[in-house]
Length: 423
Image 1 (cartoon, rainbow, N blue to C red):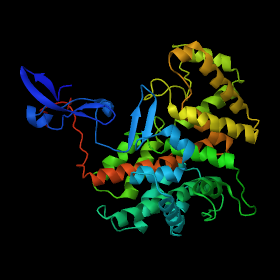
Image 2 (cartoon, helix red, strand yellow):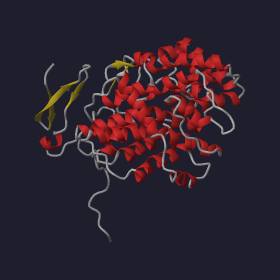
Image 3 (cartoon, rainbow, N blue to C red):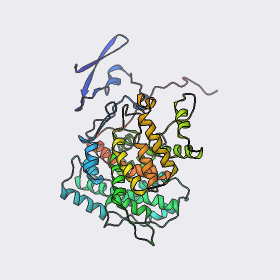
Image 4 (tube, helix red, strand yellow):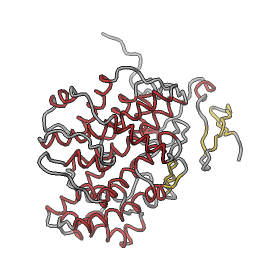
């Protein structure tokens, strides 16, 4: 392959470098295009074809259904490693040794409290406030209690900041739920693991001892692993671009939470449950809604099927399907919406209409089912997503600062009025 791409504008030719990634991806370097051409820019709404950075963290091939973290296949990581193993891998570059993991876990437990004044901030929100708005505000407020900037050139300082956010974020997430429900706030129990602590902080009531099965913990652990990073998506790009101004880690993560809040990004699994409820409230006739989904003139759309990135199948869905099946079997839940989900899944996997269009159930379909089975309300689904995505956001922010990337500053093509005067 040529090492240069040729661009011709008004009869003048320009050579642009071609860069090749380690997985065979090819990029045309246009970083000097504007300077070379005297002002010409590329136009790419949504940045669907624009590489904003070099990254060593995550590789995604949507056509082939491949997802890797730091070179490890997502299938192998989900089967053999815990969420904190994967978090360490994403943030620091390699899977931890037993000693490194033990230290990481211990250090997180040491930071698993927040200043009591955070409750004053929480009290300022009405109970009806959306949990994602509350979580974003509380995450940003962490900066007030940790005012010194993170010295990104110091491994020790950076590690401390990582441990703090990994420890405190699930606590704040649980508080958003407890606030919404009118429950007293819980703290972590350092005798429990990271994932089990998330569940007990959300659901433990003061009058009872909290118990959780290994099947439940495993299902959530796998789901968090599958959500841990996904290349340069909307929220991840937000974290990087906010951090490029040298905003701190907590502020950048808070911005990522707000980006994830959007229904086109993190709200997809909530939309799945809302769709199932719609079908259930209409009488539960799945076949009727399948026909509506096939009718192009009908506004109804099946949520949780297909993916804008994965053009064949979502590798994460294949993994989490088993965890969802095991969970539903153990809990033996009689829920009409979950029965509808099972029927929808069967049809989508067998019906030629869906198969020919690669409209297979995706990770949002199964994650919505798992969250509902665990008793997590739909408005908390995106909060759970944020807990899973946290290590990816941290890793991306850390990499951006280590690479000394310039401040993000996209260009535009002005199409407004010109040369107006005040009369």
